[in-house]
Length: 122
Image (cartoon, rainbow, N blue to C red; front, side, top):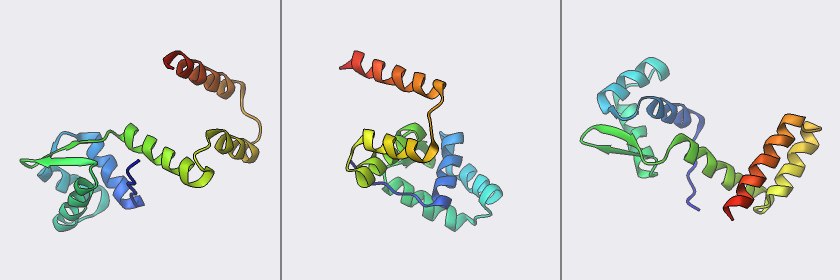
């Protein structure tokens, strides 16, 4: 599993790209200036880093996602469970529900639906 970590500011910048991609790099500079108060050089530096991490591609100044937002956050969740709970989803759920309290009937229903879908695929 590739390890891709983003800081808070990088995540906000990545969200801007995901919301607008495919997008010209000039437009990203404009958006980052408006939303993050970044200069052109900062925008291009962080964009280059995110491309090096394999999240985005910048071809002919058009930036597009290599990894969707859903794929990225799914990977982050997997890494968290792997690192914190030795890969055990039941251990994660036990810890989560111990702190949160009882699951709502809707949450239980959704978990059952997810397990049933998984069982159908296997």
